[in-house]
Image 1 (cartoon, rainbow, N blue to C red):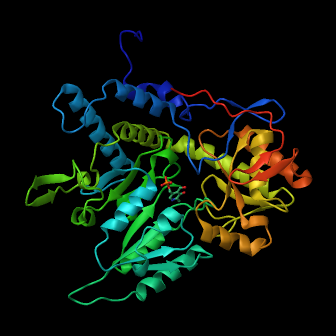
Image 2: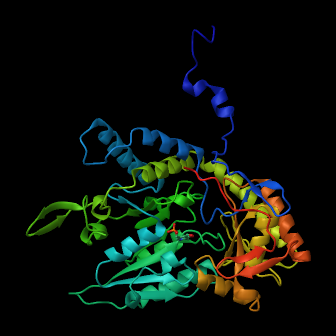
Image 3: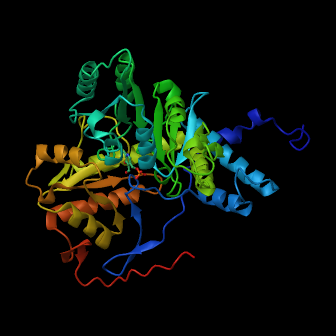
Length: 459
Ligand SMILES: Cc1ncc(COP(=O)(O)O)c(C=O)c1O
């Protein structure tokens, strides 16, 4: 029996299963210049801030650009194609977050926008409970007088106890004016990368009849989000942290509060009827998406979600190895302190925040870039209360009380992590290899920098 005459069925093609899953490719950066005049492969250890675009995302944008036309209101064929792309992107995102049948997926600009949208949609008399350790996007949008801030917890059990206690003591409201509660949780810390005990905290919230919104900005690229399985009411995340471009985010979840709220933006697309007598607003996602939507952003985000969903296992494996290498490498360097919220062995994503004894963290980050071609982040990472709490424990005298964050991902290789650990060890032992000066508004910059920042413009 020849192969040509009887093609094997899909299930019997052994080579399909034998081919190992490959990491999805990102659009690679150019080589980056260093002070010595060398050009190095950019060591991207700044994924927690923003992730480089996937090649599949770039292709999806190019493909959708070819048929790009008006969306929703046009009758031409290409308008119908564009509208179909936009709504299919919504469905892909719904799959990505495990949305329930009746959940809405609202396209926003980013996580900050999503949480501000929800904050504006809260019914009157809603108490908000939030941990102080949150990113500012998650900590700050809520009406101050109804917000109950919990201290930075020391352990997951501590977090549960704090939440339990806060919910038990919330003002009760009256039969005529009942109060509701919203618990704001984060899936993974943007400072330490540690995973929060979302399931356990959601169970506590539900026991008290409170709703839950989950900030998944730091976890969406690394861990499965499943609204239904978690029992979480809403989830928010950003395209630029899941290998799609800036400018698109998501708020997905229960429709009732969103349908009852004033539209986030007033304008076309959010209306059901407009007359001289007044405006009737539509319901559903469109109520909060007034104005012409960011179709290419939604397409890009959907392509990223689909790719991550299809390659979860290989991505997890890659990140686990890099996380382990980062942690063991940095912890072994004399003079380096790494930080954790729930203990060194707590499960975390590929993020490690550290300080180098006697060196300003911004100077460390500047030297890593200028001398070693490594991109990290220094500062308080928009989580001032958490960073203050973490640093106080170990080194209250640290200059400016800031830290360095190394965060790995799809564009990070093992060589990048090795280079980082070597460079940090060198900095800790000998200080920077060049002279730097602190310039107002720019931070630490090398004295006599021969490199000129004159990038070729992409258009
Ligand atoms: C945990 C967390 N939440 C929210 C945000 C805000 O995301 P965006 O700037 O995309 O709105 C960030 C960004 O760093 C984050 O890390």
